Length: 161
Image 1 (cartoon, rainbow, N blue to C red):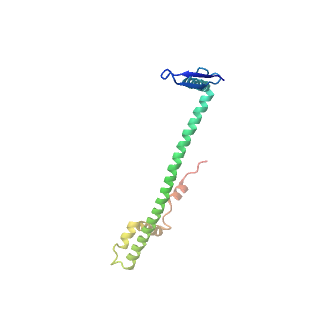
Image 2: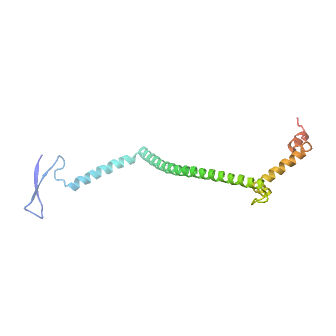
Image 3: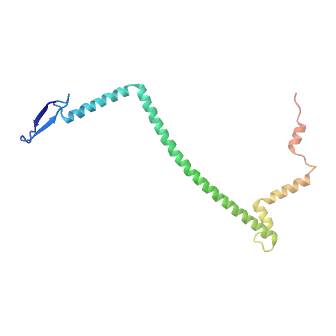
């Protein structure tokens, strides 16, 4: 190892001692950085010159992008599932409340039709029970006289052999 004194031009009285390593004799710190950058550039060019390396890099980037998208979608799904359970519980509560009010109105109308706020016939029309009662009555009256149309079609259909 050789120790060399270098004097600066601004201050000729001041000298700096430097320890020069092998291959670094006479080199400035900026020169070392430049050589390191050049070596790194060469290695990168060698790496990117191979098509296989480029494909692997592309696939790794695609995997990272898809993983990120999947993570974001999973967060969104978790939020939506929480909202779904909250909506279901709210719907169940509303449904049970509506059923309780329905039963209350029917009980009021059946107990004292004159003082009920809504008549029993009107309640049945609102809740669609009037149609079911009318259909059940008409089908019971027709009973044996009326046959199902599907049975008629099956009986009258010609047999093709």
